[in-house]
Length: 195
Image (spheres, rainbow, N blue to C red):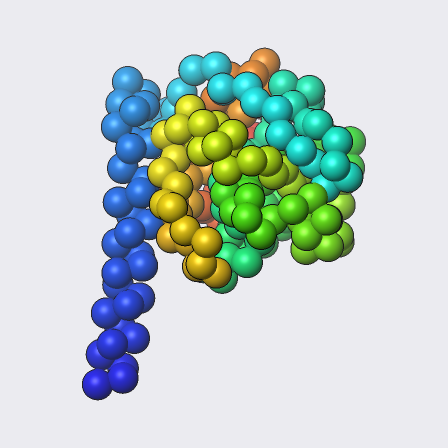
């Protein structure tokens, strides 16, 4: 009985994440999915620009972060989608020197808990190319809507959310959209093809 309940809850969580990814897919339906040998949805749209607060409490704007940037929405206490995404993105970064490594722009969807101080503590060892951002609930919800990310109303420790990952080119346009986070080798193959 207990195993059945656990299986049901796991399935429900995965289904919720999958459903949460659908708006991103529908909103960018003009893209050419998995074309030209890429592993994500190709795009040429301008990435919606935004300003939030970084771990030092200072304003940080997406357009001021140079180079290739991966934009990802999640929260620091996540135990499902986020840890594996962070791990693969950090493995990708490890293959570059600090100056040329792609940036990771992590937008917390848990403004109730993820203060700049909390994010600073959680990501202390992630290096300067991992940029964790937070802001008011209304502001984050507005930015997430621009990226077609659904954020459920919740103050619980678990917030079911999509694993959609955006790769933004140096010119500010979205190059690729991954509806689930691929491994670092896949990310690297796509990045090399773009360069």
